[in-house]
Image 1 (cartoon, rainbow, N blue to C red):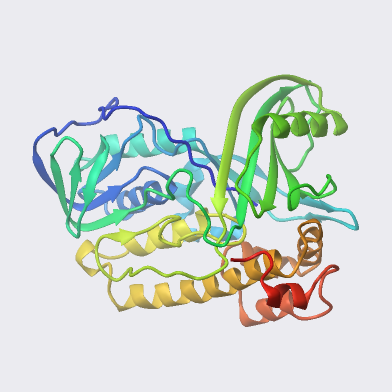
Image 2 (image 1 turned 45 degrees about the horizontal axis):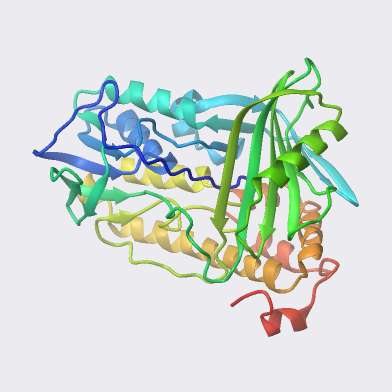
Length: 406
């Protein structure tokens, strides 16, 4: 699973290398993309791939796009038409990946790939610099309207379609008290000591503060990312305690740590009720705040990519046509199912029992697992997930009482 991650910096609006300042001016573009995270980066790349002369402006307040993230996906998440340009974002691929639970261990022989924010930034800025009509503006946004965006310096960027994908607010709270939170450390370790394959979940660790697992990405023989992840009913993250647990886990896996290269951390509210926002007119709210992510796993790339391909497949003025309405209705059906699963996970199980839900899930056919991660489950998939003997610890009384959900 891929925890979300957001870092807020207090940088003043500026113009980075190769970017253009328009202080006090009024400019026009076909697309105005507000926020330089994964969603709008994918939209920009999809547009420039399909229509290289597209006039677009991407606005990001920080000097680099993408924040401080690692995004992962399965091979089937990328349509063939997009593979050419998505491949340029990938920094590492593995042919298989593992999951480990107290009573179940499994290797899924299916390709798993990783994208980093630094690679995203490099690819997008190079592609934009090569375009005649695309630009990146480094600035803070004052207001977002239907066909214009006002920057803090008073300048305005007008567009036929405005897409606001600035993500959740820093410190955003969950109305139902459900969170996915994590601390990740990229570690330099002794040579040739990392595992061969990623471990998407190692839930053999102590079940503290809800459902807890370790997520492991072996970048190289001497470099590994380990994330200590929790599905919890509180948003407290004790970085010092989690750092100690990561070092303890690394030692248990036979990894001798030389130094910490990088840190990621995140607290992502998990929805247990579907609260849809109007998305039929510009500006479109996209990314996490627009519900274009997986409500259960936190994975964002598959849905963000599908939305980007839809936007790029038609002119800006036709983006919100009947095809978009059909796409949105299908996506919202998937959301409803995942949000219901979240209610079960947080409402029907005591915190220390949530591990059993995922352990049962990973006994399902691999095709069902992959479609669930991609947020493309079929009716049969949903029946397989819900039917059969409930996981250990299930309590209907607890669910109906709503002990964990406000």
